[in-house]
Length: 145
Image 1 (cartoon, one colour):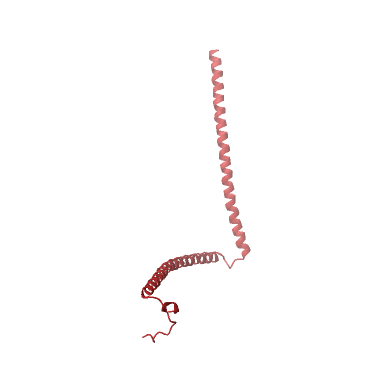
Image 2 (cartoon, helix red, strand yellow):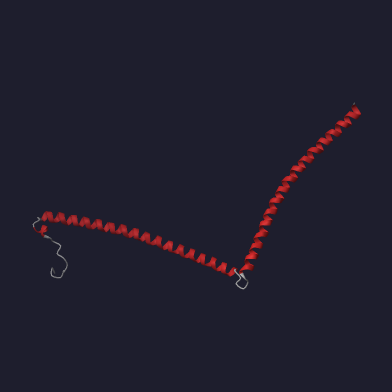
């Protein structure tokens, strides 16, 4: 059986002169190192497994993002009318943008007008109250003075 093994000999010259107790201690030390190596290997295999899972999840997320981007580009390409010239499409988009901006600005003007109208309404109410007070004073002065 010793002739079957063709690798390097495990016993170096330093093991030849050891006593049986020293050899047992050396075997215990080597078994401890082997156990530590197995523990480290298990630890790294668990970390490696977690890393592989994270890579897999990231790969799936990237694939979803790529598909989403592809569909958006496809939708953009579908929305462009290749039969019409680009200038006409730009003019239509500009007109649409201008209409939307005018609508937004008109909304601002309407809000300003509403504020102005509310201020005028308050002023008219105040003037009406003052006129009624003045009429009341005139009537009082006519009948009671």
